[in-house]
Structure formats: structure tokens, C-alpha cells
Image (cartoon, rainbow, N blue to C red):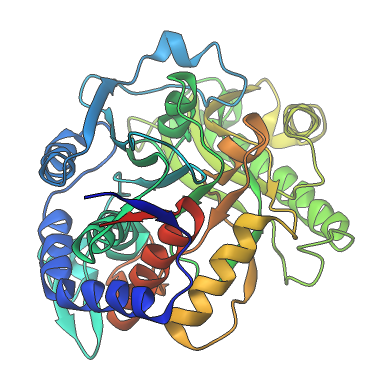
Length: 433
């Protein structure tokens, strides 16, 4: 039977798409919960990737899968420093390509990696045993971002179930390393994957992300002099020295937030730039003056700040502490990049892709599409800065991300999946028997 190409504008087609999302929604929640049960922590993502690869195959997508390569990534200016083995960290891309392309191509991107659980005693239930309560799905990675990652899949499935086929290439990307470097999406770029638009279904409270900050991960190693505690003054306590470094960097943090008051997208935020002291490692004996202390940090920068200039200031401030604080007498301190090394990103308003998403959101939810500036890292900068592709971020309502009892709002997952399915159809065009 002859096929025709159309842009989804008819009420009948939209109703069929929404009905297909709703018909499979219980299955979608079950699939999401099953994915949450797999602890896809950094460096151990492949068991979850196996599940997604199989799901992509089942809807007829062509699979491309490869293992992250630290040497290859080092050639890209947007890659973060690698400090772990990548032998169990694969990228999985499922591709659909029509026989004749008439619409615009699309990448639906999401990350499969999740952060550690912290103290399990703080969770009301096991973080790896998802449960539903009062309209929320709980568990590590539910919000950040397995619900969105699965929504990408089920949105494309719904289109097919409604009897419609995209008239342009669609790529489902499941990447690792978003929580620490962005290297998964950078690697997808290196492997040639680009499109006319990218949508990342990170938790965004069902709003489009107008801007996000850049992030730098780094460590500072303070080297002191060991001594017995009874003659402590003859040594140099590296932990005390680390306190001095932290305090100097806290002063830098406050100065950066004063500068951020003039930021176009973060000027109205209360303290948008945060220096987090994430890990401290030091000492080996209570009665010995520690001669080494390593502190690991995460700090953010506005889109107006340059990542290279910011890094230079960090290293300079560390040396200011060494030179001016008596707690660092006879000590040295060295800063080193650890993971994230990224500029911020601004999605410029007015793109056709955003207008299409806005229309799809309004049809799916009955509400206008809002926008938000996100004071956290998102992989949209990878495509927005290095491929000049409009990189939309739009996803469900998530709470307690990176904390105990992480959760995602179930009704928002349904709304997002409806919106994504309508967006695919409108952006890519469709063929119909």
C-alpha cells in the first residue's frame, strides 16, 4: 500500500498517539522499575545497557554498541578527565532510518549511570527495590534519570503502536558517564552521531531547560610532614592545611556568586554556584601527624564564565592558601582535574525545535511550556557547544536526586512520554498506511 508523508496536525493522529502511550503506561512503569533494580553505578553500567539494547532490538532498531575509550576521548576538548576503568561502560545507540527521509532527524538521549546510594539506613526501603507510594516511584535512579531514559523508548514505541512511522532518522542513545564527566555523550559525538535536534529527558519539572551551569571536578593534595603527636609542632599537619585550602576556596566561591548576580540566567538565583567538598582522604594513625590529605571538590560556573579561566583561578587560589596561611607552613598543595571539565550552556530561544516541543507539551498536558535555569550539569552542552545542534532538555518531576528516597512523579512521566511521542511525530514527520 502506498504511504504518504504528513506532519502530525490532525486531532485523530494526536489522539491515537496519546492513547498508545496510555495503553502501554503500566508496562512502561514496570520496565522502569526493572531498570532501577540494576545498580548501574559508575564503571558498572553494562548490565543495564544489556536490557536497553534488547528493548531497542525488539522495536526494530539497528544497534551500535561500543566501549568508552579513554585515549579516544582525550582527543576531544569537551571530555572530562578519566579516573576509572571503562571496561564495563558501553554506549548503546538504537537507530531507526526510513527508506526515504522527508522530515528532520532527532536524537533522544539519556544516561543510564546513577550515583552511589550513600548511607542505606537513611532510605525508607532498599534503594534498589523500587516501590510506588502516593503517586511517586522511589529508588536510586528513578528520577535521575531512568524514568526519562525509558520514556524515550516508550514514546517511540507509542508512535509505532499508533500506526505511524517516523519519516526521518531517530536515534535512541543510552550513555554512561553523565554523572561524572559527560564522556558518554561526547563519545557518541565522536562516533558521528548528530541530528537536526537533540532532546535529553533529564528531570526538569516538565519545563524546558533554558540554561545550565558548567562543572569542574578536581582534587587538592596537601603534603605535610609527619611527626609523633607529642611533638606535633615539629611536623606539618596536612589535614589542617586542607582546612586552609577549603577556606580559601570558600572565599572564591562567594566571590563567584557575587559575579553571578550579573548572569543573564542565574542572576536571580540565590547562591547558584556551589563548591562541594565531596571526599576527604587522610591520615593513617591517631597519634601521628598526617603528612598527606586529599580533598575532592565539585564547583560550578555560570555560562558566562570560561572553564579554562575558572580552572586557572582555582589553581591560583590554592597557592594563595599555601603562601598565606600558617597552617600550611612546610606544606605544599597541588590541584588536579578529576572528572567534569565543562562550560555551561544556554539554549537560545526561538528555535523551531523548541516551538515544536512547546506545542507538543501543551497538547499533552493542557498547560504552556515553562522554562528553568538548572544549577546542575546536563549533557546538552555536548551537542549545543560542540555540534551546534539545539539541545532541548525536558523531563519529568524528580525530587531528592542524589539523596535518600530519590523519587519521580508518576503522572509527570505519563505527561512527558505523551509529549515526547507527539514531538517525535511533529518534528520528524510520519508515514502512515
